[in-house]
Image (cartoon, rainbow, N blue to C red):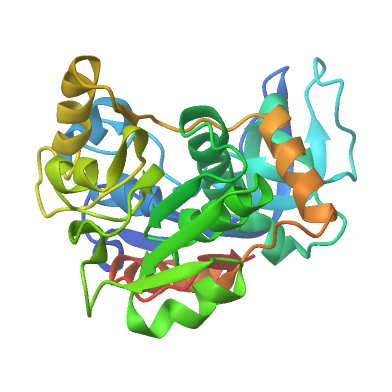
Amino acid sequence: MAAMVQERYGEAEEVLRLATIARPALGDGDVLVRVLAAGVDRGVWHVVAGLPYPVRLVSGLRNPKARIPGTDVAGRVEAVGKDVTTLRVGDHVFGVAGGSFAQYARAAQDKLAPKPKLLSFEQAAAVPVSACTALQAVRDHGRVQPGQRVLIIGASGGVGTFAVQIAKAYGAHVTGICSTTKLDLVRSIGADHVIDYTRTDDITEGRQRYDVIIDIGGNRSLTTLRHALTPHGTLVITGGETDGRWLGGTDRQLRAMILSPFTSQKLDTFIATQNTADLLTIAELIDAGTLTPIIDRTYPLSEVPKAIRHLQDGHARGKVVITV
């Protein structure tokens, strides 16, 4: 099969190459997916680059344990292990798999769900990691309620576009922060108010307090974020990038966890997980017309390095997808 492989860490253009390798072997609880499309998220870049360095505690200290990057997947079930009971050969599925930048990928059955009927495979591949992260940020950690004021920092990215729509589905009044060229996009997916961060840092001016702040792509200080919260508001940090090779922006998350027990505000952070139950919830929202994946552009499998670079440079409006 054709696959994008890497033998060492580094920039995508330098370490990724298209190669022909064997299909992955299946365990008893595994599903072999014929990949028709795969999503790209910032987690892919972190694994390819091996940065920040703590990533390597999981992915491999000196060289990557997994030769094929990619997690988001949409495709057709090609084969199943003997213990798989929820899926059959021929089913159209979406979810997460190991090494989805390939013609075939192996996935656990509890990481897949039937593809939403309204979506193409390319659209479905844009959903799993980002939408699960957004759902868990809004529902589980932000605990957003109808009528609350919610601020989403990084509203135009992969997670952000889902978070705006899910928060609106939960009845919130949503403000999104993004750059000038992405204001119309964030408005179009339901944001009640948008802030152009290139023109003003409105959250520091004290005119508005938010019940929930979901910080996806920001790097504002905890002091700034807390000042924009109500006295008993909730901050959820799901991202934030710096150039640090050791912490890479995670220092804010660590400080939030330490400070949270000593303040009336809830300062939260989490690492998202993907599972069939959440994928089914997301599929219901999609099939009801409440949630729509936003795709910036697609690339063929041979151009995975270009796709990662496009995302890394901050140009993407929504998700970037690989067609296989």
